[in-house]
Image 1 (cartoon, rainbow, N blue to C red):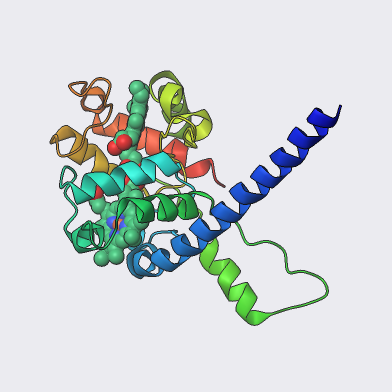
Image 2 (image 1 turned 45 degrees about the horizontal axis):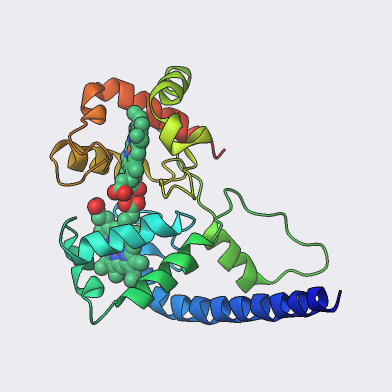
Length: 222
Ligand code: HEC
Ligand code: HEC
């Protein structure tokens, strides 16, 4: 009985340290984010119609992987290159910023104004955080069917990604950005599926079919 109690107390202490450790990481992440915010926005919401992608809420391992690819120049990204050099972004920082961004949830609409208080600054901050993808042209129903047949297995229900597997959400992402990445996959500037690097899945679809998939993905956040 006594031994059980001791191990219980030890577990609580351990959990406490894990919590504290994470809090420290997140603070560092928040600091690093000030650099990223210049392009990706304060909350990782992206901007300029997808010139800068949304990065908030993506899986930690996906964000970390992309940062390492940029740093190793295996994925070309001129604007980000200076910020990913090892001396600017060592491995510990990659982990901290990736965890920090991953835990940001972007609402898809403005919350109702709270009854007791109206704070204009707070409201402005709330509005900045909202990301609702504009309706993309195309046939939503056809796109949904195709998505469920061809993409859902990896990109998850309604395109929201799979955090544990490190697969990015493609819903809640700017349509322009998705198009640009499809071209990068086709030109072999990026690898879509690492397990099958020669797979040319996206090349098998017509422009119209992909447009229909984007149309579907653009309405799941409405
Ligand atoms: C000078 C502008 C700029 C800054 C600063 C910047 N980025 Fe980027 N980032 C970009 C651009 C542009 C892209 C899109 C590249 C492309 O089209 O492939 C991008 C892409 C990304 C991606 C890939 C997203 C995806 O879904 O494929 C991640 C992750 C990312 N940035 C994280 C960061 C982090 C973390 C920081 C801060 C340490 C940062 N960026 C700072 C411009 C910037
Ligand atoms: C076998 C699994 C798999 C399937 C099926 C799949 N994807 Fe992906 N997709 C991935 C992975 C993994 C990534 C992240 C690649 C990386 O780490 O750079 C990705 C990335 C993407 C990206 C870039 C996202 C970003 O933020 O950079 C787009 C766009 C995309 N997929 C579209 C699609 C579409 C459209 C379909 C269906 C026609 C599809 N994918 C089917 C695994 C898959």
